[in-house]
Image (cartoon, rainbow, N blue to C red):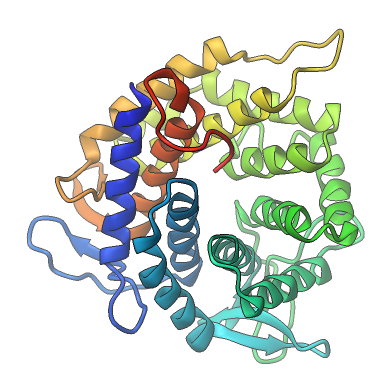
Length: 344
């Protein structure tokens, strides 16, 4: 698949997401693709992610028209769901009587990316506060508290499949922006434990590959790189996600493979070691996934759920957008300039 094609698909998906932001800043979260009927439900973590990825595209591919609706969506999130929590009065994202670690992490990524696109002190201050909350939830064993109940702040025993990796990704990105070593040290210490435990390998943790790639960008460690290799190998060897007949699994694991290839390209493996799987093995799987995703794409740039369900949800668009954007950025030079090559 040509990078220019992936660029067009990503740009149309980003503009479709932006078109789903209403005058107040709330997304049309879920709707029937045939009738247009809006389906009830909302999820602020996905709201934040649906800001984050288009904001990356707006900055990397020079699409400033996206920034106004994305800023409106950010303002809605801040005004409706960000509260001060605990004795430190740290900002958190509250929804349905609790605080989700992943929701704070994705909100951090969203406001940080908007700040990169259009520097604004209040956004950087908010990202910093979110980062301090993530640090406060890290436990002595390197794990995180995934959920706290409101109003008292009691820790729940709820465990999210993705929150730990999302927190590590957010901390790595925040360190990259601020240079504050507390964010990096906490993320590296947790990843050391996770690598030793093969965390995310059998689960094919796509968010973990995002997190590892982000950490490798700022503080490379052979053990962490090897951890990423093991997750990527699991995705390549066991592509069971394709059998679900749904767009999100294909898109998510495509994002993971893109993150893995960015990690390989950033610097060669250390002398005497070899990255496995190699780019030569990963790229065909990546491009096969992109071709499969096209079956779920609508004329307006959205992506349906699939599996017999003709519905669109904002995360369907966001994950597919990230997959095509990542591919476009990786292979931009092969069929002419399509934007700045590099990480998304």
